[in-house]
Image (tube, rainbow, N blue to C red; front, side, top):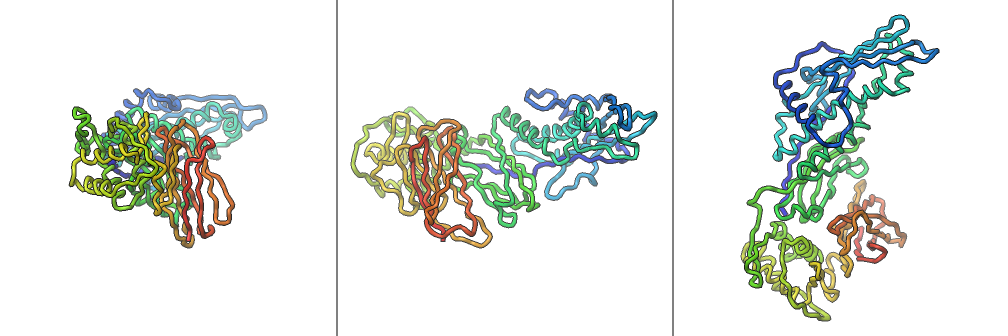
Length: 515
């Protein structure tokens, strides 16, 4: 599987109550705003209504309401206008991020005859230099992120306008203000507690409409080592629609520096360091199918179906190589083959499958896998070897295309993974060494043969003292699951046994040791 990685810091956005002399936007900033606004108004996705703040760009909007008897003032009238202004670099500096936009609230209060008048001359600033310079391999992602910046800033304006229009708490507060008091700007959501989920959902909808998927990962300080971290964020099995061409993964991050996304075997890994170790890091992952046709491996199947051409993604060659040299076990290799068969990537013609009490995988099969991974033999030779396994009962191919090792084939002693008829589980490692102040990361992954969307696999972890606890994992559409197990440096030394159940049926057991 080809995984293309592109990592750029997320363009941050800010809100400032501030007073400064107005400066006209540059022609580049004006053109950028015009383009984004035109694209934004044409969107047909669900989002918070920001029409009032947009209206304030063309003419002031007026909000007026009476105060209660006994309040310091009898009436409040607010006039709000927003202008596009030149980006102020003095306001746009944030450690570890580049600010994409700023919305400033600039209100003054006057009082006459117990009537409060609020005049707000707000400004929207767009960092055109940063936005236009953030080149993106996938232009669809670039357009989404630009629209998210505009939406984010408009929300800073709209949320405050909403409070001024309908919040009883804000009304009661301002009805007892004097011209010397400050307004309550908390409704602008400077800490982004409201805006973050709104813009995340907005971005996810745009990515989906562009033909991709978006995934949000949070890195909490507790799962890092002095801010540094490495974690699994997905698997190639999560994206069956993309496996033929490979997956293109792009990322945007907040509060994370030195971020890298790499592929390890079939896993997608995220690593980096928190800029502020007291706060969580947030990563937006964009997953698209790779459009680079050169990454394809087109092959001709074996003699039984000579007219059909199929495609084997390049990552399966890595699996074959690792299986041949013992890096991964039989179960891992079969899991990959099963996945390819189920999704029609490798086509195995119907054959008569012999039944036998005991079948061993011949050494020449592993040699074939190694030679094929190195390009020494053809794709057809490799597929012939897979068909040999099915003919001789070493690998069973069901009517639905499922594949599994026969029960007579013992699990690899190196990994202790066990597969039964209804599924399989495996671990990322089977021996861990304790280190002071470092968390031990155990990834329990596997598959089930009869997945149901939204259902859970139940993992029971039995510690060396025979005390057990349970974890839950979600089953994906393709039947896979991955559950992280975090153990601190004070965990007991000895053997841990992991038992997986699905629909109250045990699907596998694996064990690991902490030394």
